[in-house]
Length: 123
Image (tube, rainbow, N blue to C red; front, side, top):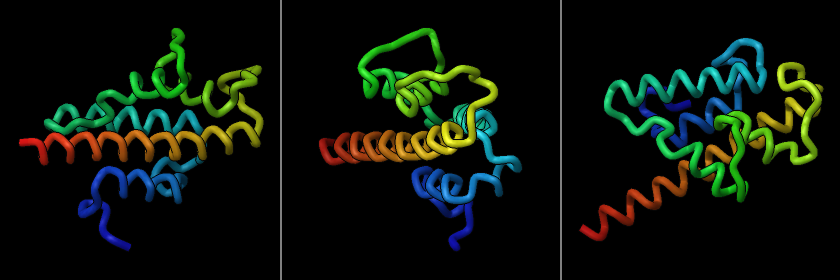
């Protein structure tokens, strides 16, 4: 396996998605949301893009906004039927939310990479 420091963001997030417990201990949607929020804050603090645009991309992808931050947007996409208790998701909903989180994150990163590549080629 390639060392984590040698990975691009998209490859890094794919690695986290394959083995989330290695990064957050107990695998849960909320632990992963906290991990990604920390990643974002650290990246931005050090001059990187982090997850800039992620929330807006999710709202556009979903086709409507609400009062939720990006984790809520992911849950709306993963579970359009809704949920009873945000902090105690049934195991099958938790698994689905995590799978959808990393699918969406990969789509977002791919779109952002393509946009960046297009900007570079037009210069």
